[in-house]
Image (cartoon, rainbow, N blue to C red; front, top):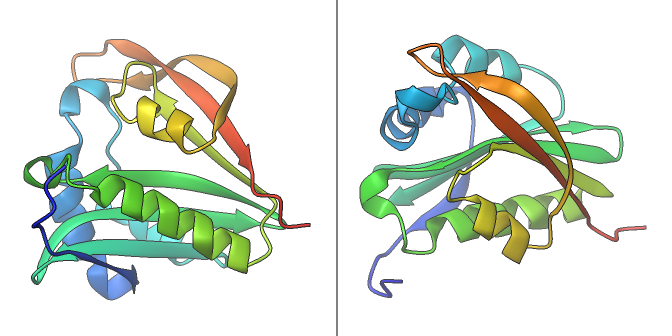
Length: 159
């Protein structure tokens, strides 16, 4: 991990959608069908209980995390780090901040799903997430090939 990259994590909103889409386009390989459209992101951001975290290096978007709260649970809907900013602690910082925000908001359980084989699996396991299920053929890549999704959760121990 490079110690010399200067980045910050800050709350985001609708005004940051262009930066989210820059990171989305760079972070998600279309062969797996994981990326969302701008309209999908805007739709979620417009819902009560949603929040966005943006990682920036200088003023450039380096990554983001998009989450949604439902009662005392939340779901990490998307987390992405642009390719040239990977392996520098940004993904972990985004995930740690998302967990901190969730705990501060009284959330008991954080859920996520990830494509089977995604390198981010190791980050989730190291961060205390436990696999609770799978969804066969959940993701459909641009060629029509299907990929399984794995579902995880982490109890945050708030209450």
